[in-house]
Length: 365
Image 1 (tube, one colour):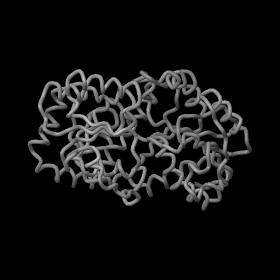
Image 2 (tube, helix red, strand yellow; image 1 turned 135 degrees about the vertical axis):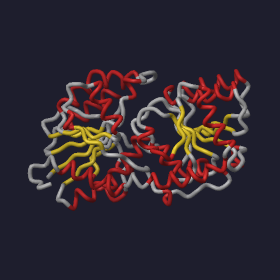
Image 3 (cartoon, rainbow, N blue to C red; image 1 turned 30 degrees about the vertical axis):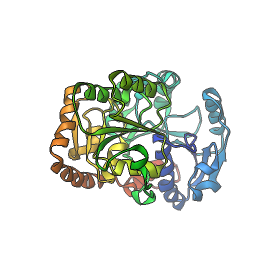
Image 4 (cartoon, rainbow, N blue to C red; image 1 turned 30 degrees about the horizontal axis):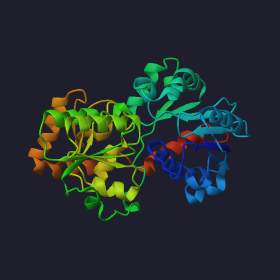
């Protein structure tokens, strides 16, 4: 049983899909190997892989968007029974193919994603029709796939939740972070992720423009982008520089410290395929205040405080409620810890491995 795993998304600065890929490979590959599967992992650099998987690396220098897809197609012509991509990036192949569609953001919120929009509009419809399996990470994304790609066979889609990209114990908390950014313990809301307009951070700025809150907002992520610059301009226009702190891209230790010392995690996004920052905050013992759209209620369950991301006053209402009723924080922290139990890597890995094994003709799974 020969399997090629497309992990070309991996880099030295992994964000959402990269973190997912790293962890899913670390958890699933050992199970598949025990079942007798011979694995090759397509990647740009074997050092991006978990150390124990590096001997399986199939290294390719990908280049730009077109080059990447051409080289993927060439790699997919190898002698494999199954090809599995941990993202939506697939290619024409005679092998049984699995792709993982995490979300449909480039269709629903295409701003700043021109190449991805083209891919989702022209290439992905053919892939979802041709693939043997489609993995996705939430029931919400499953519904989106069927809504935007009606020719897709629903029986091919398998919902396999994800979980935290790393265990909290894997992160050494950085000391002195609060002092570095001039922050007080529990004196701020933290937002993780900034790159695109649909993250809706501008609505939080509007909250502070219209209302008074005594907590700062710390925005964790690479702010050297069009949306980051737009946010800073809006903050300057309103004279709110004292209320907002941009950290830029941070390592895991610093990010852990910023989240764990926050008063609450704030997630105003208008769309997510899953929403890992919700679980991440719960894991660090921080209450979550987030949007009530897309997959977030599915992930947060009853352990989060929800608002309408299109309603500035509702966002303020939920933020101020928690500020005025800080005694409720511990209740939401406990509920968050309980909610985390629904997302176990052990279960996810076993279910994913079984779904892959089903496609091998030799398998009795």
